[in-house]
Amino acid sequence: MATHAHAAHAHHVSHSADHHGDGSGHAHHVTPAFTLRFILAILLMFTAMTVAAAQAEMFIAHTFNIALPLWVNVVIALSIATVKSVLVLLYFMHLKHDNPINGIIFIFTMIAFVIFLTFTMLDIGNRGAVDRVKLPAAVAGGSGITVYGKLPEWVDVSAKAARSNRPIIYSDKPMFVGAVDLRYAQIEAPIISKLQRPLYDARLQELLAAPPEASVQKAKTDGISIEDACKLAAFNDTLAKARDLAAPETRRLLAEEFKYAVSHGGLPHPEPRKRLEELLGPELFMSVAEHAAPSSHGGHHDGDASSTAQTSRAKKGLTQGLFEKASESSSHSAPSH
Amino acid sequence: MTTIDANSPAPHGHEIDPNKPLYQQYKHGHHFRNAEEEFDACKTGMWLFLATEVLLFAGLFMAYTYFRFKYPEAFANGSQYLDWRWGALNTVILLISSYTAAMAVRNAQLNQQAKLRLNLVITIFCGLLFIAIKFIFEYLPKWSQGKRPGSLFSYPFSHDAWEPMWWSVYYSATAIHALHVVIGAGLLAWCLRRSLKKAYGPTHYTMVENSALYWHLVDLIWIFLFPLLYLIH
Image 1 (cartoon, rainbow over the protein chains, first blue to last red):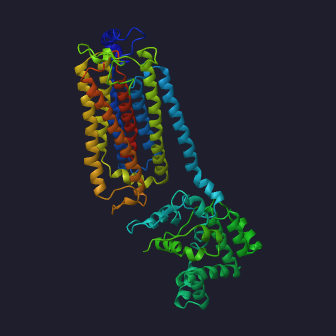
Image 2: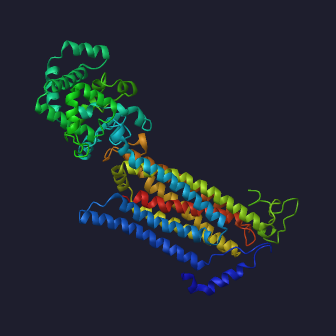
């Protein structure tokens, strides 16, 4: 240690410290002034280092267009901060020459913190994986992009959703209870997806041009808009059409659909699985299930932001009667565009 | 406060001798064997308190970890609005004040009364400077631009839907830290006031030691907050 260079000075200090006390115990350690100054210099140096490291990372990322992983920044910053805090603890806070009990108290506090951190990180880090198995679709508080309440108009979530291939879930629930209650929210998102959308859109245009009596009645009884009732009808018609046309092409489309849903954590849950089986019939369902390889197909969204938003807005009408739980336990609203 | 930093150093009706410095007249609590034992007990008590403080901030660091993990883009964007130079300046200020606090303890141990007062003054000044910079150059401009926590957020040019969450974490962490700076400066101001009467010296400096420990903890927390808040990208 550099204190050896100033051993004479340090000796002088501890010598003068020996004269204190009431004669009842050992003298407290007096940290030499040089040590304190030296530690301050190291701390300032490390502060400069941590800033320089952050600047260097930014420079590298921008100049060579390398996207550094998130942990690089965190690991460098936290390593330097840890070294700094150990120096503060040992020298400024005297733990080096102190009664060991004080250091032990601090170490146990740190252990408590690490337990706290580790288990929380295990939870957050694995949430997507759990969702994939257990949950039918995108879940508020889960691996989708969750929007709670009404967003300001300038916030463009749909672009982000298109970029990251994640569904958007709108939720009115307070954020921390959303995860369980809204498990069934937006179940239609994976089912009406890109492959059925042309069929769905065409049918919806037809229905909107001249809303059938049944839809007008449905809108009245369910207290939803006629538009939503038409969407619901279009949704049902689309699925019925797909089931009726058990042609090879439809089968292929449905296999795609199924793969899509699986890759979004959509179908392993018993409820939607039962629903799809009901829609397709057992035979077709099994053949579709054979084709569906869960991992081979990444998430697909049609990148069309407005249609994603529209699906979400249609959700209230669509979800009703499809899964009772959804309409019971959740209410949705979408930002008005 | 009665045992570690009594206003009246000679309890039980003893007169204060004006010719002797106060610290020499200090009598340890009757439930301790000697002043040494009292000092150790007070200090261990302080460390236990510091442990609870660390756990308080652990909750905030946990919130930070959770939300940064979940919304990395919002945190990267949010961090861009902070000027690292103010953060770095405040880091340097706190480090220097930590050094002067440690020096103040040393001065008390060595009965260097004038230096003790000077170091306490510098430390308190650094604390106030920290708060001033924080408020004048960081909180006020950001708050007035609408960069506010949670539902108060009204900044019209945000890039990410989760920026209000970033500001929530930023304001809670830094404001609770700033509150600690104020409390720490208050403790040191008390020490300064008492040191004018020569209350602290080689045989009795418990209050200086514990206040300095508190101050170092505040510094310690900032050592982590600075890179985590200012240096993300």
